[in-house]
Length: 67
Image 1 (cartoon, rainbow, N blue to C red):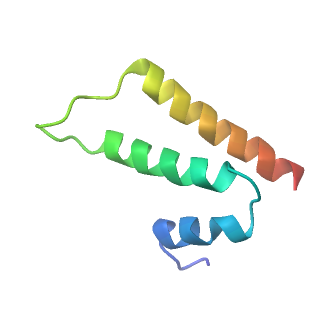
Image 2 (image 1 turned 135 degrees about the horizontal axis):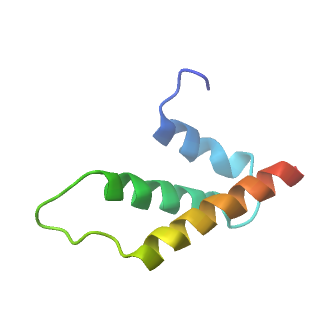
Image 3 (image 1 turned 60 degrees about the vertical axis):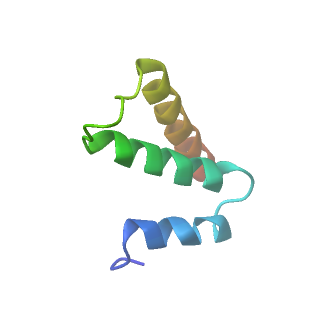
């Protein structure tokens, strides 16, 4: 997995993380990745959206720490 792309790693995540944590991580990664790439035709994410995605990542980190 060291040489795998991030998307490949995320695709394997449900095998390692039980519950909705894997889906939340995949969604948060996609959303944060999109937010980091500027597009003229899209609105920037709101502060509430960013805080929600960060909270999802923090929850996943906490869940992984328990395993």
